[in-house]
Amino acid sequence: MTLSQNAAAVFADTSSRSEADLDKMRAVAQEVIGDNQQLIVGVNGSYARREATSGSDVDLFVLYRKDAIADAISAQETLRTRLQAAGFKMPADGGVFHTPLSVSVLSQTIGGMEDKNEFITRRMLLLLEGEWLYNESGFNDARTRLLTQYVAPNIRADQICMFLLNDIIRYWRTICVDFEYKVQSDNKPREIRLIKLRFSRMLLFFAGVMAVGATHGLERDAKIKRLSELLALPAYKRLTTLAGDKASPSLELYADFLRSLDDPKVREALSHPQSVQTESDQYLQLRAKAQQFRGNLLTLLKEHFGTESPTVTALML
Image (cartoon, rainbow, N blue to C red; front, side, top):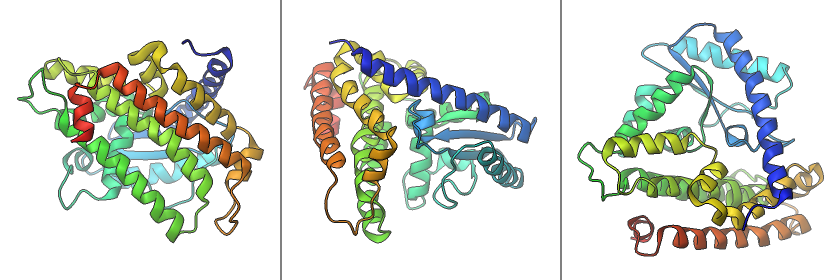
């Protein structure tokens, strides 16, 4: 099954919008920072995934090398102000990306008592969906540095990158747990968060699993190289790169999700406060599609790898 013209048009539109805006952001970042290779600026979220819609904001993050924390803080504050003045929607202050993070801390704090939600979130988003805005070579180096931490020097070709896969699984489950916490404790709108969880977050997780599975049978250096290539692709492109037309049933539904998010009326209906008990018609329709989307991804996983694949087995045990 090939992707329909309507679905292909949705991906082409969001990709074109994302690329155009990324170019604008990169120009602003270059103007603000100038020539300071100690800083790395990236973006996560819909822009990084090439899925920007009319309601998208800019999930900016700043990394720094050595002792450039003061420069990083100044650059981040100025960038937020300049991007907002340029017409970009910025998220509220606070959250895990509020403070610039050292590249060394990002790559060394994996597991253990010090590996807080902030670190796993920043680490996984950089790997699974991150895109550079300033210092492309530094950004790519940071991603490769992370991958070398995950892929052990003595790993065999017949082994999968279990360390990385386990962290991807852990991140996905962390998102699911945090969703319940946020909507219950912070009284956040539930419907739009749940729909995003069941589409964009689930695809991010699934595409990460697919990338790990694609390295089975490769030697260590080839595993890292293949992961670097695949993780540089937006999640939906990663899916088509690995699965071809078999990904189309899932991506048809994903295109419906993106089309809905681009409709202000749908976003408004999904964003009502929790105090409104009646589920919106828009939510019920998207929830049904999300259930089908999940089933399609599960079918794709089994068909692509086979039920005896070590990747599939590792997801279960």
